Image (cartoon, rainbow, N blue to C red; front, side):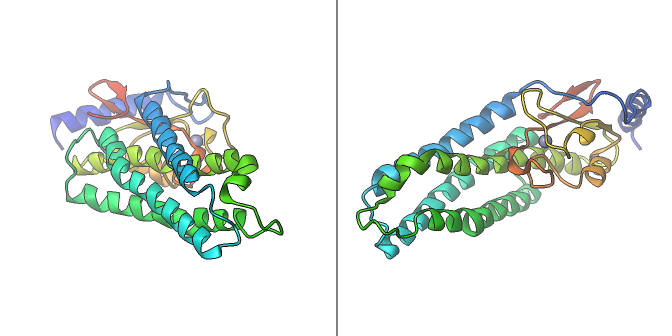
Length: 247
Ligand SMILES: [Zn+2]
């Protein structure tokens, strides 16, 4: 064990010594990751709105055209993820250029995002745009009442961006062989309404791996009742201070 590692363990032990499970749950400030996640959500919704403008005259009774339109939308949302998830990952890891381990993790994130789009979003939109008795119904006429529900639904996929930040942070800790030694903490978003599963997880842990063993997953990856809406954050204790990334 290096001198630096011993210091880190010592600092972590001290921190844990003053922490107990019944202590007040930890809250974090709204950070850069949250702002960028909101930008990502806005980007996803912009893709939906542009799609609506192009497809508004598609008639629901033209089932093939509706199917194709939904596939097109899922594809465009997936393209946004492919372009933007590496940005989230880099925010967490502090590394601009991903290595092989990072590329594999990113591939997994993109694949689960695509599984959500194909397995959940596309069937949802198919049900929303099922043929009606009204022969003149179009995607645009249904959108008059349903657009805001669709925007909310598309916005849920911003959770993938949030998770990618923390996956990046975890990979960096593993790369530096600190996943078992460096203290971390999980924080609630002070502005969010909390689900039941997140608050007990908002505390300090002796290490990344200890945290994962306790929490069973990362914020917004589906491991909590708030699912992709989770805005809990993770910080690591490095060189005497708590930081969320770029150590
Ligand atoms: Zn949460």
